[in-house]
Length: 336
Ligand SMILES: Nc1ncnc2c1ncn2[C@@H]1O[C@H](COP(=O)(O)OP(=O)(O)OP(=O)(O)O)[C@@H](O)[C@H]1O
Image (tube, rainbow, N blue to C red; front, side):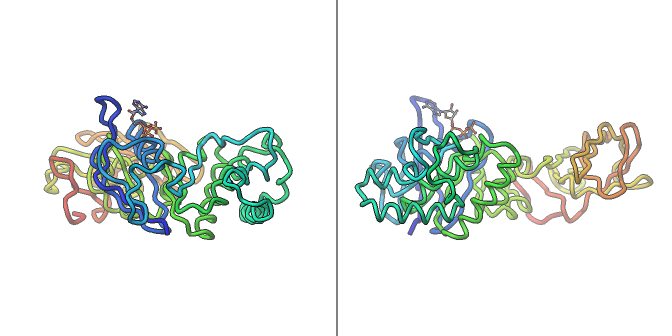
């Protein structure tokens, strides 16, 4: 079992309040991702769960037991860091089995566990190599192997892929997803990478300034952001926000519409504007359009609809996909 509950968790460093009144339930087997802007407290929250930092208020429960005062090694959790923290002079086998050896596990049993983990991680051919003879992705798999053999109640990942190049990140992301399917162990994963969050998470926790803004499945957050912060944070390129008359006409202080929910036309539409930048990113083209009286709007252009800077364009937001927000920035019910 690996159920983790945070009840009113607080953390201050001196008089700097970094985590405020966080309530969160992580179910057994769930993959939960913490996202939020730099400095919002993602890593601190993970370190509080790991026991690497002490809380200054509230409680942390693992499987119903209050572990707030339990040292890290006794919490039954395994942490995987972005710096793999491998021992360079030891083989992959010894690195993966190190914690088990320290815990006094007999060699035969240890080897069995190490080999099983190596198999899951496709590391079997490398067991006798040293970390220096491995690629970055393989090293990260060794670090994950070391976490797996301890059979923790939960894995805690702190930006584990941020040292890898783009292609490797994609590979490792798929591997972590596969691993989660195979092992079914609870995982909490900190990242600032939206795609990692959207693809890996059962549940995303969006943090801002030490507080939870919203908790939900990736699609819930994308389709029904609770407030302007989450609406602007989830999705890339960002949701467009419009205030003034266009919002008031829909009974809102602000309306939001994602670039992919705006139709473009050369002849007619709701908002008339001029293309300022056309950005080609492989499969997509994003048009940045200056719309007098509305502001700068980003739209995703599909198919043949590729305009150049200086050309006129008419934009029509999909009425079913317009998000409305009140003066406090809270989402208003119903899409229109
Ligand atoms: N030991 C510390 N002493 C004082 N302040 C700290 C300490 N550790 C973290 N902080 C502060 O707490 C806040 C949250 O930091 P944290 O590392 O948790 O953010 P984060 O969301 O993980 O950011 P990033 O995405 O940049 O890693 C920051 O303002 C940071 O400066």
